[in-house]
Length: 408
Image (cartoon, rainbow, N blue to C red; front, side):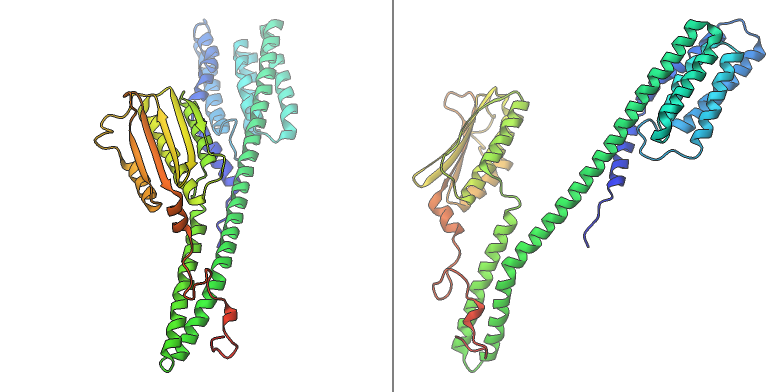
């Protein structure tokens, strides 16, 4: 069964991971406590201070419960959000009107909750909160009313914009998840189709030939042996085709690897000079050279400390090669152990194509050179399909049998 991807779940998990970064929310804390500092530095009576601190404590507690999911929370607002916003607005309004105008600085923080309302209610509720904030803060004078109102309006616009950005991120993550799901499904269908095309015919021939060989034994052992040999040829050909199909998923291309090396080296501050052959190379040869470029580039970035790197690939006569050379400090111990773990894998790939790997410091002792050489003739021989029993290049077909099961 094909695994389905819940795109909204993916988006919510991505935003929840970001919401776990709690430290940006601490930037609001000093602003919230400014009116408290003003209250404690005044000469208000103890009962007024106690009531004001009680109202501020309720504001902190209820506000935390209402807005702890943050502006980018992917979950929809709860049913308690609107009552909480109304109660918090009434709380701050009472503190501003009855205690002192400095409590009006708590109004802008309520815009975090307003941004989590349905979109149709965000702008009207922000305008209403701005009006309430300006009216309540007018007890401190026109300037205070304008300042608190403008702050509430500005913070509200900023919160609305951040909320729209968070919603766009949700849509983007959902789209990416859906694209990934479609890509996986399409790749599975393609691979299933390729396997069916590769193996359907071959397995049918193997089954028919095996059935025929069983009928011919033991009376006609010579003819049965011929069919058994043909079964072996068909099986080997099918195995080769499957290996080619599977290797296509991980076989790199030289031009793509060089382009990837360019980006990686530029990111590491290393300039790159490239020379590639004009004529196309056999797929097996190109794959080995591409693996060499990948390994050599990794070594340059991790070990060399170089400023320049050169990748030179060419084919001449029966030899195709690629060399990666840098001007760095070289690798200590390269002469004693020129093939490390990564390069040992290149040696195995090269031996399969009649090639070899050369690795070591350059002639002047500054820099390192990695070179892969392979034989085009050996590569062509390794890629050639095995000949059939009768000398034909391809496997026998179903048409080689008569309807009565005897050989055609």
